[in-house]
Amino acid sequence: MKEILVLAITRMGDLIQQTPLLSALRARHPDARITVLVEEKFRDVCGGVPFIDRIVAWDKAGLVREASDSSRSLVDRLRSIEAAVREIGPGPFDLIVNMIHSQFGALIVRLVPHREVWGMTIDDEGYRAIRSPWLRYFFTAVSHRRLNTFNLVDMYRLNVPGQTGPGRLVFDVSDEARKWAGEFLGECGVRSSERRGTSSEFGVRSSEAGSSRKDPSPPHGGGGWVRGKPPAPLVAIQPGASKEERRWPPERFGELARTLAGAGCRVLLLGVEGERPSAEIVKRTAGVDMIDAVGKTSIDRLGALLENVSLLVTNDTGTMHMAAAVGTGVLMLSMCHSNPFETGPYGEGHWAVSPRLACYPCEFSTECPDRVCTRMIPVEAVACAAKAMLTGAERVDEGPVWASVDLWRTSFDPNGLLRFRPLFKRSLTAERMAQLVYARTWASFLFGKPGDAAEEEREDYLGGGLLENVRAPMVRPFEMVAEKAGRGAAAAAEVARLAGEAGGPGHRLDEIESLGRALRELDAGIERIAETERVTAPLVRYFLFLKEAIFGADVAGLAGQTAAAYADLERLAKLSGTFLHFLEDPASGAPARQHALTS
Image (tube, rainbow, N blue to C red):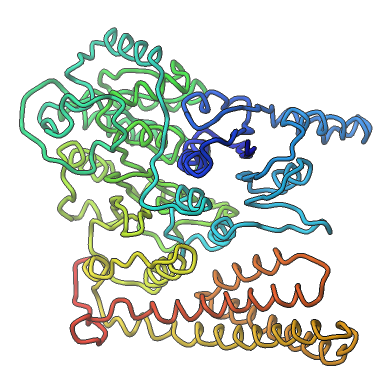
């Protein structure tokens, strides 16, 4: 029996985002035993994931505390780590999938016997190495988030070969939790007709009426709506978030609750007990009756409550991913470090609001003294979007209320990759052009197909000036990287040839050393291009990860791997240069002229 270990010591939302990966592993290895290492406080998430055979739960904070306690001897500290590792099992595991993206995770991989690893590990010399293309891309995207359009769920699940079509988040709510949710909502005066699939002024979605609560399809991803006058729809709001900078002000959530209540909705307030102070501000500001579930739910019961609501309005939270997993539509409010492209709700028909600000999204290391973007999202805009989602609308009319924000809607491209399409047309900036080019480049390189949707993107982004003004400055940087990478591939291949000749590397040492110097000069030149022409930086970052993963002691083998890394960089740069032309007018073959649009 194949033994697979998934390292997933992380938060609730991240675990749920990894369920398509676990599903893909199970589909590819139906007879394997899948063990998952999780943090103790999130063990219950695994109870709703049917693909897991065995759970090992660690108190990560306690383990780190013991390992770093200077009052204990080094031997005792090492014994603590050794004892924790023994809980995982003796191994060897056929495959370790490392979703702990830190040196801590790499150390665990090193300590657990295994035959293959996907993700970060440590090589025999103690250096970092990242195995598997999509996880290399993940680390590339972390460093260049503003040019990434791939959702974390897709970055994870596509590590499993053979994936076709979109993935699906999974959380199976227990019958006990469903019973509790029904009783809790009943005690709060919520009738069954007020739960998901019904609404008052907003109508009932015909394709959803009478559907099973286990139906995983998002409730606002399509289908018709019929008008009716049943009781009020139940809308949940989640004002908390794991990080303060990702929180929309609680006063604004309160104003939103008052607006929704005035429009005929019942409002359910969610959160953990530690978020009680924010919840009280929401309730005080709203001044209307709300159903308070703050601190009253387990993970399972949270899923059961979310099955009953027609819409969740939330910051970037684990609750958001739980809602998507149980089939509830999400309206995400994104700000500061949070980026809907990366961590937004996975599934068809979810919406996201984000600030239209030059510095958004900021890097994870940024400490903003003002956090102006948390105040840029107007209550009126969020209320408008919420009402539109409840009626099954696919867009809203643009007006002054949207001047400071963008509005996005999720769909899947021809490759089954999640994407966020703008609901308002915007001018095509250089940054957005680079995002769209890179979406095609990486999909072609990592997935084999670009997932072309150029016609839709011409419609979404043409506006204000000439396309050529945006594109022209990007052409030469990609050409320069491709030229240097091609020379590097040829030089490294020559080293491999010389090292493989009879007599070994020492036979042609002078020539090999000369080629080595040329390669070092090429590397320095490639990195200078990335520093001065930032549009190429993601390609160079990925190239550096490829070089980090080179291993072995044979000179010819090392040179061959190096040649392959340069060849990959050359291909990436050429793909990017080619896709710079994806918005050309297909009828004439000439660049499509952009027309003025209201921004």
